[in-house]
Structure formats: C-alpha cells, structure tokens
Amino acid sequence: MEKIGDIAVPFIICSIILFGLYRGVDVFEAFKEGVKEGALSLWAAAPSLAGLVIGVSILSASGFFDIISQVLTPVFSLAGIPSEVLPLALIRPVSGSGANAVLSSILGEYGADSLIGRTASVMAGSTETTFYTIAVYYGAVGIRRTRYTAAAALTADICGMISACIFTRLLL
Image (cartoon, rainbow, N blue to C red):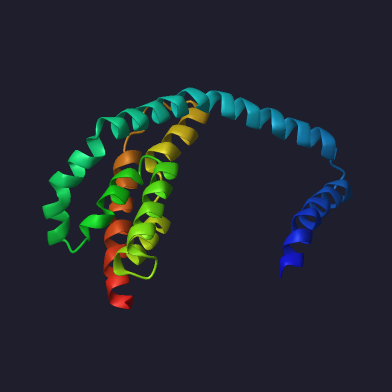
C-alpha cells in the first residue's frame, strides 16, 4: 500500500500533462497562469487572514474562551453535550490549528476510545472552521458583506456538533 502512495502523485501529474498536450494546451503557460492567479488570490486574502489570526490570539490569551466555556457548561449539559468538548466546540469555527490543539489535549487526557474522545473526534471532523473559510474565500474575491453566510455556516456547525454528540452516544 505504501508503494501506491509513492507513485500516485507523479502518475496523476504526468497524466494531467499528457492530457493537456493531447488537447493541444500549452501546459507550461497554463501552469504559469495558474500560479499567477493563485499568488494574486493569496495576496488578496492576506489581510483577512492576518486579522483573523490576531483576533483568535487575543481571544485565547485573554481567557475569553475559558469564560464562555464556563458560562455555557450548564446549557450544553442539558443538551447532552459533554462539557469537556466545549472548548473544542467554541474554537472550531474560528481556528483549525487551535481546534487541533484542543482535540489533541482532549485525546491525551481522556483517551481516543472514551466517549469524550470519540465525541471530540467526530465533532472535529463534522464541523468547519467557518470564520477562517469566510475570511479566505470572501477575502480572495473581494466580497465585503457576507450577508447570511456566517449565520448559515454556524447553524451547520451547531448541527454537526449536536449530531456528533448524539451519534457518538448511540454508537458507543
């Protein structure tokens, strides 16, 4: 199985190049144009990403997530959501790397096979870094007003989190 991974990427790249040549496309020129567009998109999204990273850092350092977690624990307990996964639920829509750190901490403390560990794993896999995604994609194309995007995406995140808790309990 390891050998398949070693040859898959070069095979796919060669296949794309050969298909482009077969279709009469100047493959190198198309590659250069794609790199140029990617660099311009990255440059356009950079201010949004910088603002998001700074905001998450400030919220984490100030203890905001800890305070919100303590306040929401009774509400989440009524909904059947383990309070131990609250920090993950709060950080996941904002920061992927922060969520991975929280998930790693939860798995280290409670174990991967515990209800809490499984719930956290399913929650991390069934939700999105909503604000990061909005910042990157909307920032790249210059959209300033997100309208209903954040509300709809956060609703989907909440549904994913609740579903993770329900289905993990059912399957354990």
